[in-house]
Image (cartoon, rainbow, N blue to C red; front, side, top):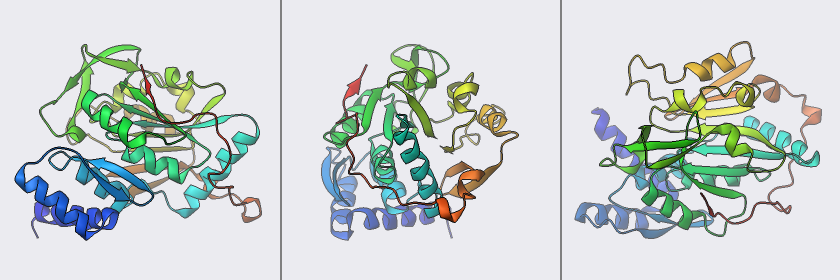
Length: 290
């Protein structure tokens, strides 16, 4: 079967799972007619904006339809136990969502990990505006307009003519750049629970000189882009940081998932259910952070 045809069926199925067949037909009809204005769709407990002629429908299919950021019940429970333990010690668990696009991944991760604060980073201005709308009113999501990089300053947005999920950054000017260390410094007593990266080949620069921050991170989720940049070794620093650690590796959709093995091997007696999302947390509704 033609791979393009299979990919279309995959996304149609995922979008139907996420928003239902009736709304799916409406989205696809608008796409066929070239109507690009954002429309609202109900996705689980959330009402979200989707732009029919952009890549939003594919992202929604992957995240909410096919659950490509799920790490399994065992892994999710282990991270939630760890995050709850940090909270009891006064530590804020942080999930950095680099390449948050229109916010679907940030919302999904927020719902999965109720003790964590999600820092949603997106370098495309228009896409970031949609992210702000989608995350408005949701506690524990901090929106950051910018790009994850090896230094504070500016970078250039590239591939701006392509769909929003394919845009990346490179050396240059125009978009604020932030470091992982700088992001965590924005919250008191913050500790990295998860790093999620979908940043179109910028993984090498984003993780350069992050050894102290990433050395013991419990979970990394990354979409590799070596196929786009042969010879660059986009995940070189990620692999070097994992060297010597006991790590479980998973593949879900387009993502590589690395999770500390000791979390999954925790004795059953220590596995207590988390309290859900009912406790009061210090970071409230999503807002833009310069």
